[in-house]
Image (cartoon, rainbow, N blue to C red):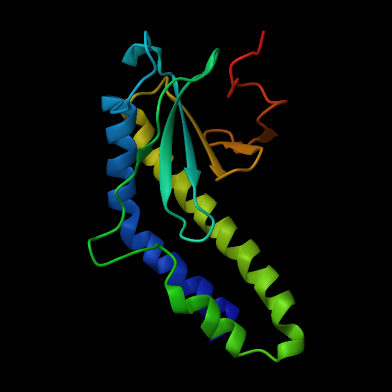
Length: 173
């Protein structure tokens, strides 16, 4: 399988999940089903930080007050059926790497990772834009789990969590 074929297969799998993701985004921005910190009201949640696991691309939503930081526990988004374990078909990467000479595998892996990440982030941002009218003042951000980089889902701006325009962590006094 070529990289282009693999990316097309991944994009098709994501496209099939678009209605589910849009519904899940609407659910979390409207219902705020989070276990919020003591004293935090649902109306205080004015941002959602979506974070996805690199290996499975499975996202969670983290409640955020853009002035004070994270304000509760994350909520998993239900994108997978009971028969699925991850969004990226498990054999996809292996099929691509088996089709290239061993000396080119690392370069192929790096290229595949970069393209798949871009496809996923574009898909997620487009789904956010389809859902966001449910609560227009809600802010949305996306990142891979355990990274300092965030992407504003409305503007596409990438910034570091510690240097960006939004507070992700409370100030330490």
